[in-house]
Image (cartoon, rainbow, N blue to C red; front, side, top):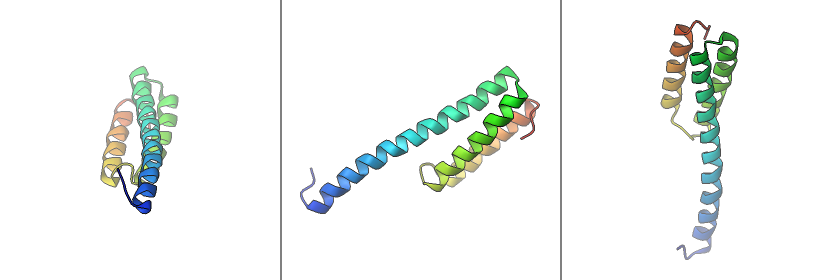
Length: 90
């Protein structure tokens, strides 16, 4: 347990940030799942719309350092490839 006032405050801040980051990461993963489900269904309109939202969520997560920027780029690239192979325009 922290002893100093500053370390106690840091512990409180870290707890809040951890919850916020976890919520963002969960939201991002759900969006990625939506894209993959749309690809399985073969619905091009839904696929393209979900892909645009997923790219936005990935960029936001990378800018907030929730995930690494290269991980975001890699995931966007793989999603784009998946959407293009399924017949959508990525």
